[in-house]
Length: 435
Image 1: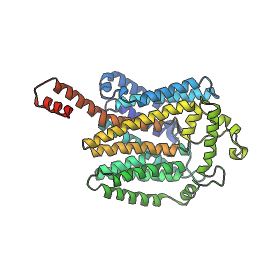
Image 2 (image 1 turned 60 degrees about the vertical axis):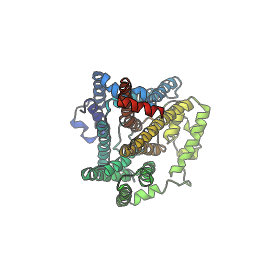
Image 3 (image 1 turned 180 degrees about the horizontal axis):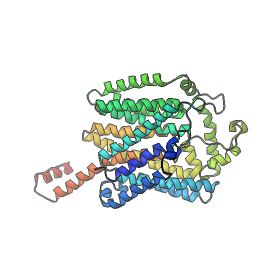
Image 4 (image 1 turned 180 degrees about the vertical axis):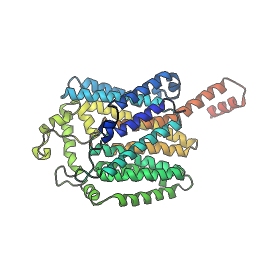
């Protein structure tokens, strides 16, 4: 039943375990576990390509053509990238990521397989929360040294945990008491990890995504029994748990989000970098390649904003993309998001029309998870992050298994019935079409 999708779950777990950078790495063989997991994914797809394509054709998801076009732009920018060696290395990593999400989309082709993929992510996020808990703050007011493959710094790790908040809320709402207990355990470790890591952007992402989902639970016209009560219970439990794990150091750091008096001390200090990135894009509309802004930051920023170093990051996935692949590349990424949103909206409307409120809220949870990640990544360089594209792919999978597949089945049934004139079902279809 699980078949080739198990190879993607293995890939997810390897990503979070990150064996090469853990203390126990000396006790295991020094091989590329992610490479072998990805190879298993490709072999699984190759062996069952026809079956997987019938269930999950790429052509029904416009997002993939936009993402492949974005990847092509990265290769083109390589001809004039300001740091070609770094650019080529990271573009190769992005190519591997695109292959993984394309293959995973086909392998995760049923609702059950999607649930397992989401739980594989949640278990991985819980492991990071546990790792942060047992490590403790070892670098001033935050945890360092527990990074992921593509996000070695604390902010990158924290952003990877953000989507888990709304997904755990959904499963706690819809699951039985055992699932609720598991969600509470996972949520506690993840929340404690976020507090210890002390990332302001991730705090914003969690509040925005969880708050939006709870607003839909409370104020949506599409309700199930006890929905508002459950939402209020989640709010009370979340606030209580947050206040319990948050310490003085956490609140002191969160208070610097709006600090504009000291350059770089608060999140708002990054606005100067964002404005500078627009100037960089005006002068270089085709982009400067990976870490292009970092290389020219000293030209566009005054010494007091550089903080004694010439090599500065732009601190935002949006402006990172703008300076790496220019206006055209950023437009392609926005088109990918727009196409995903439009198809998701269509899927949610259809689910409501057939009375599947639970799946409607599941797609909504996946949307909020993606929005939460993008909210957190708006303050750090995560334009090519693994979790970003995973969340986009998992939302696409949700659209496929809850909407596209079912519409395709209905369309096939309709064609079969219409080929049998004179039957009751054929007459019913004819009346429906004439109406």
